Length: 110
Image (cartoon, rainbow, N blue to C red):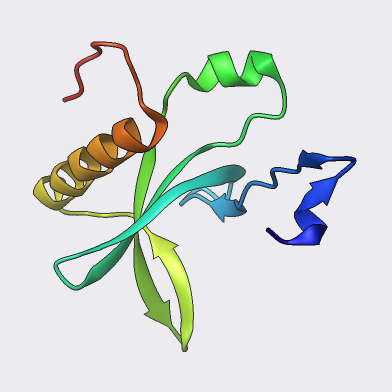
């Protein structure tokens, strides 16, 4: 374990945050939940970043799935335009996140 991650005997958790801009120019901050490669493409699962418990309840399990794309040798996250691709990748992420975070609820995802 890295000594920089230990503070006063406790592990410090620092989320991977990304500020993304939508098509209307509105910026929002998201926390990276998972990254995976599927069919030769790279995908990201993110959730709106919550700084307070109230904000956590406001976004209650919302997940955004984006795809990696290179523009001028720079990796960017872009929306997935194909509904079938989005649903397939989204469902894979949901299963991965359920296993990772050991969700116990019986909530069904569509």
